[in-house]
Amino acid sequence: MSDDGWWYWDLRRKCAVPAAERGPASDLLGPYRSREEAEHWRDTVERRNERWEDDDEAWRGEPSHDDPSDRHD
Image (cartoon, rainbow, N blue to C red; front, side):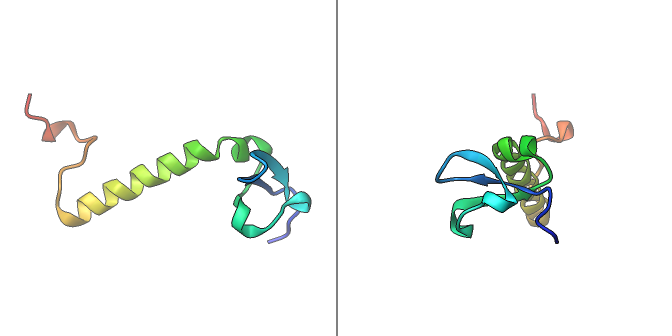
């Protein structure tokens, strides 16, 4: 993958940086396709974590938090 156009979130500097200005990999999240995506890294991480939790629950046979048929109101 070419570095042209990719962005990263720099955890140390707490800002989005273009690939050409990125620091050590241990300080970065990404790559992202745009500055805006890099700036919203937390939303991406939360969505991914939720999806992984749902996948884990399904694998274990547990009801999903989002499945209305599992509610016992």
